[in-house]
Length: 512
Image (cartoon, rainbow, N blue to C red; front, side, top):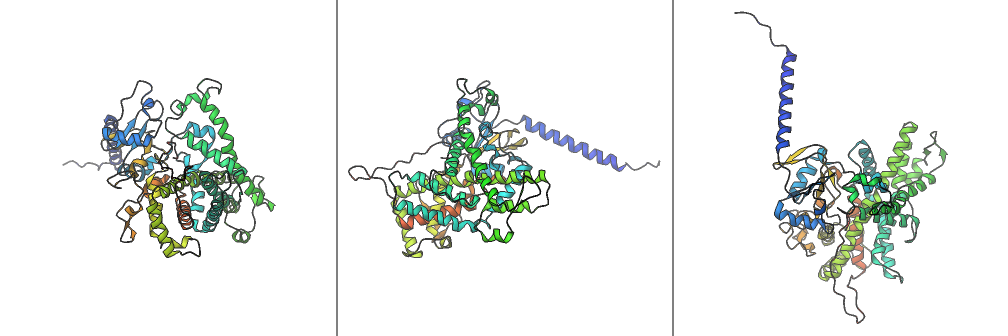
């Protein structure tokens, strides 16, 4: 028998690598041959652009699911879309596969208005992770309790204004003003006194532009990005004039209050011309909480060069500027729906007031400490989030790599729309979903864990879940408990004193 040398170790390794590469190529080839998810038949060039509903798209997508199934694919010249109509598909893709599904599609309108600087709209990147870290430092669950006194103070100021309304009083505007004024105090330490304050005007207008531009199919430039280069005088270029109107308000919302905080903290010039030396830490801790002030203090105490410091300062400004969208307009929508529900369902209001009378009593206002004993109020908060979902299609996600789901191919670069409206209006989960019924979440005097918590849907999914959700939930509880403890919410009356019938009509923008 002849002696033979053993196979060199590196040849075995090469064989393993080659086999693995062939397997990966086989998987990719198999995925490439998989069909796309079902959806409306696309037109040449235009794809399904004309099929995208301009009014209440979430409702239409839910109706389409009866024909096409739980996931629906829409062809587009530049940005194909996949609609997820069930929580199961959203959890599987956006939660469990979040490494692939955590980016954002590039919105031309957001970019032109400079809303893309808000980290909630940024693509998944190192910059996004840095901005989210700054946001999380100030608004994680253990941090938001320090803002409760400011939230309580702002809501009680609303109660006083509502008690003696002026001739131009509008409840919608007063609720929004309350939320904006609280955010201004929490984030920047700015006290705003009325609706005409610069910060309020800038923030309201910037939010209006954000909401109007985010409706699916609202602007063709999102489907044909090259249109961004046409002059504003060209017929049909209404998006250009739209951007020119709203962009200055967005920029002032981000930069103006940040600069006020920065200037107010000057005591000695930092060695870097772009930076500032902050007040002593003890002085900072003894002052009312201010998220921007705290973050600026931290980055000023880091050993960083001038270029790094400038970048960190920019990220602080952009992450804090995001709070106005994350904690204001969505909460505004939920609270208006709560007021509408109270006027439409007086039996719910009476039951809540009975609970408040029992546990709070007539001699004080509710506080955050009452939350554990006010179970029915907590159920109203949950039902307010579910009944009329404030962001029916969530903020879109973007697929970073080719994927497969239930035998269908999901190409890289597809925009993912989670149909939150369909998930929170699923009659198999929430019987009679069109009715405002907090009792659906209760069993034996406690919250029923067997019923799907709307917060698991309403605040988004995966790594892009709303980072301001804990702050928002405190606002919702305090507002709802305080209003119901002080006021009866009733329908308006006509000239003869008869109640005006209430109809539930919702807008169809990004934020309803």
